[in-house]
Amino acid sequence: MSRFLVTGGAGFIGSALTRGLLAQGAGRVVVVDNLTSGHERNLDEIRGNVDFHNTDIRDYDATRAAMTGVDIVFHEAAIPSVPRSINDPIPSHDVNINGTFNVLRAAKDAGVSRVIYAASSSAYGDSLTLPKVETMPTNPKSPYAAQKLMGEYYMSVWTSCFALETLSIRYFNVFGPRQDPGSEYSGVLSLFMTAVLDRRPPTIFGDGGTSRDFTYVEDVVALNLKAAQVPSSACGRTYNGGNGGRVTLNEAWALLQKIEGVSIPSNFGPERAGDVRDSQADTTDACKYLGHDPHFTFEQGMRATLDWYRENR
Ligand code: UD1
Image (cartoon, rainbow, N blue to C red):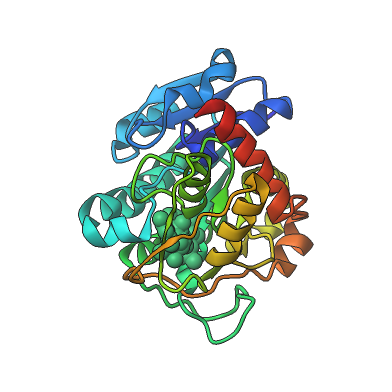
């Protein structure tokens, strides 16, 4: 059995991935997280099977030490959010680019065989057509998008220059249990769900016609687990990790009101700088080469997440 390490393993996606690895029989998982946006409580039920390192990925020596004996690294640690990267660009640059560089360097030096990277659909920017396919030119509209794309380039050259297997999976607005709704930079669905449970209006930036390919976290976890096992021939490139659907912000808020049986008109604010208008994944390559097979409809994911917030908030 391979030994796995998850950077950002105390975060929303990273902790779900850590649970997925253990459920699949990993035995123990190494988690690297500096708890800036992750929380140790996200690992509560599995703490006994986690080797937790309170480590910043910008610290090469500590990251390298955590990787000793590790075969496969899932690199989820990042400072997310498009608007945060505009309002406060230095930390996101430092973590998302320099941190990613360190993770690759440490992985190579530690003899890791494969790194699977959480890339972002924001790399596409506003494309002329939908869905977005990996062969399209990239067009980042924010520092965050540019940083995440830089990470993909680094993954690819670590494969070509240093023989380290890498795969980049572009996430498309992942949502689900444990997504932290506690900041203005939180994912929009976490903010919408806590708003509907509190019976207060959310703020929609723009006219509400902005659309996203919201992807349930368990589908992203399943995809990562498969990416760890695909043959080497599938490595060295980028895949869309979306669901393949497209939902507008107005539709998402309408569905939440319907589920809860309430009528709460949303507030509207100006469109945010750096926002992409529409996002939808072409998942052909991920399905073909990685066995991607998303199971959760948007409504199923929303209901499961809403239940979680109701019980755990
Ligand atoms: C972007 C990336 C995504 C990445 C994420 C990490 C794109 C297409 N996607 O997500 O791959 O994982 O960054 O942070 O760029 N909004 C509201 N009200 C709110 C909050 C947000 O209307 O209270 C709007 C935003 O302005 C945006 C949409 O909802 O139009 C989604 O925002 P958000 O959840 O922050 O994610 P993206 O920026 O789309």
